[in-house]
Length: 479
Ligand code: UTP
Image 1 (cartoon, rainbow, N blue to C red):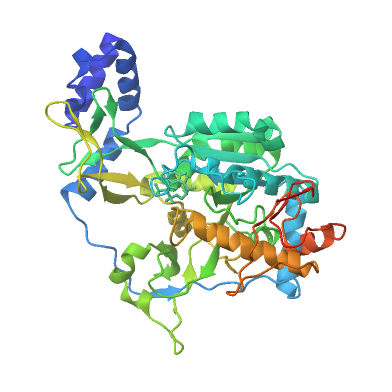
Image 2: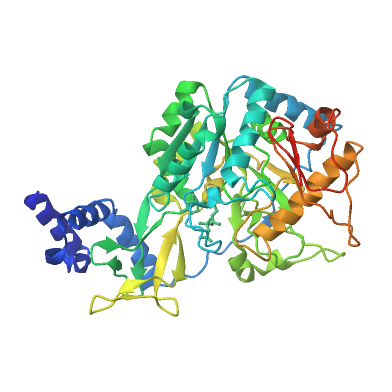
């Protein structure tokens, strides 16, 4: 033990990071164990590279000779031959058990500021069911329709692993088989101060953050997920993010296009409403499929161009929904050294010289992250980018109010579900602005689409003019 501690100290010193042991002599044995484990988990050579590139230097942005909009597949409608063919192929892949679900839920959810994992947020407007519960109900629905098992691989991080597992346990895995829900943990990276030194948030605790949703690539391979998928005959993973309440789990159209075109990694895209909208943009940069972050729009001014009607020419916004093939993840993992990292200058609580924890008023250090969309540059086929409408597909929850918020999700839910009820021939009271004036909630286990709702709701008698919650089995609760 003493010897390996000595080696650790020597290594840290060789990389200029041995100040992290400055409180060692005053730590309890438990704290020592924790700090050692944190320090041992760090790839010091990688950190040297990141600090050299992103802290000591400030590299100019990449330049491209040519940027073009990514070619997209129009919103899929069953009356178009290609879409029908895709739907059939997607359903076939689902029935054959070739599809697994890959959820990334390891983020810190700082903007939402919820006290618990983001997936535990009670998003049901009436039932207060969580985001995880809604995703699970969609899985039940898809499993019922296709007579298949959709293994659910959920990436967590050290910051929320225990709480997430606990939440699933408390909720009986939402009725799913425990053996088909698989949690795996992404790696953490240390935060560094403006001079490139690792930061302590307590005498025996390094300030660290999860390595971004791109961390799903090494995590899938290193935690045996790729192998588990192979063992189950799963070669296609449906990737989504925990905060997109509206996601269509295992969408046959999307899976079908991916399968038919031999996709390695495919994307859904949504049309940007205006050029400055705060979403990443899918495009081709010198022929390579890239997603440019919205914070970089001014670096590539052509991305701000509009057509004759004032609409964005680079319209393909990124809703962070992908279909990814298992062998592709394994291949990208092999060259993960080439995978790009991003830095963010943030306010990071730290210990000052007297050992007091300080909450800085302005950014004082860097967090490093990888982004899953950067894997798109490694595909070796024509882009597969399927356009979606937003309602019923993309309603991310980043904060409580404003754009992409809990409040906007509740509005979208009301609009979506009111249209389903009306399509089934029942009335929804609306206010002067045309919005539903009662609260509505429909379990996605009962119906995943308007068509399915219309078909299943034939025998439902909804109470007029009252809040309505339709549960997983079609039971109605109203106030
Ligand atoms: P965001 O980038 O929106 O981050 O993540 P976040 O952690 O949810 O929220 P903020 O930025 O701290 O407010 C988009 C998705 O990627 C996952 C999140 O859990 C969410 O599903 N994610 C993000 C990870 O799984 N790991 C990460 O390291 C970062």
